[in-house]
Length: 132
Length: 136
Image (cartoon, rainbow over all chains, first blue to last red; front, side, top):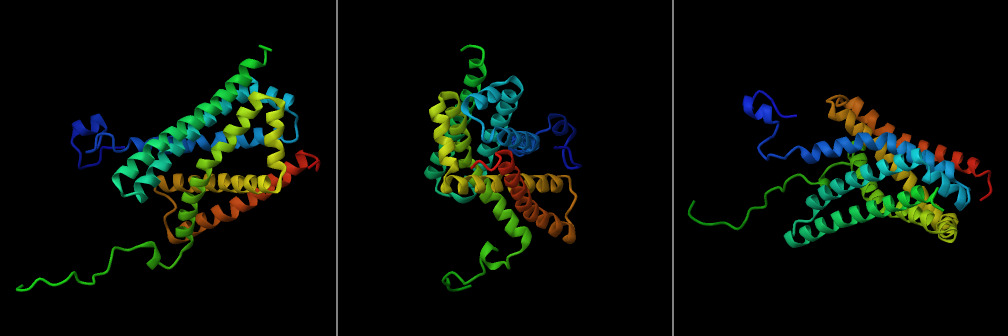
């Protein structure tokens, strides 16, 4: 990332720009974007394969190890990606400082809540398969 | 130098409204809008998973909502937003590598995002109805 001709050897070793963490969000957004491509395709395939099935069949498929792990990865990657994305949108459009801070907090709360609620659902299905 | 004038009518910094709409600009705007829609669309995913983890009744509940006209419309919009944002994201990843910036490549990539997202959504829904065997 860092390390153009303008930076000192020490800065190149540290790999940090003037803002110390300036590229962290950019990098994490790309990292999750790349992960989201195969995970989203898998999510859509799982969804289509569950169409028209009753609850028992859907619960069994969603709770099976491979599907559950893919779904968990999908949820973690997507909610991280969307939190950073919405943060950028808020920072772009909301110039009033208190409102911006409140919205940034709500953004984190929402992303975490949706992510954990979804993960809870997957884990409950997954651990419930042999438990019942 | 002598007198202080009222603020002159200087041109403001370039803003969206003064540009002629272009394809790349529209795709950029749509990318952000679909991202925002998907943000709230995750509520559907959470609802679906929690319902599946709760009870057959709860699962039937989301199933009947998604079978309604409004549910189908939301699901169609969600599908298109998901595909469009993914294709737009791939376009951005290509641009991140420093490629695809010539005028013809920009236009082609933007057009491919739009045409691709509509086509893929159509194919997915036809496939979905086939999987369900036309039972709904």
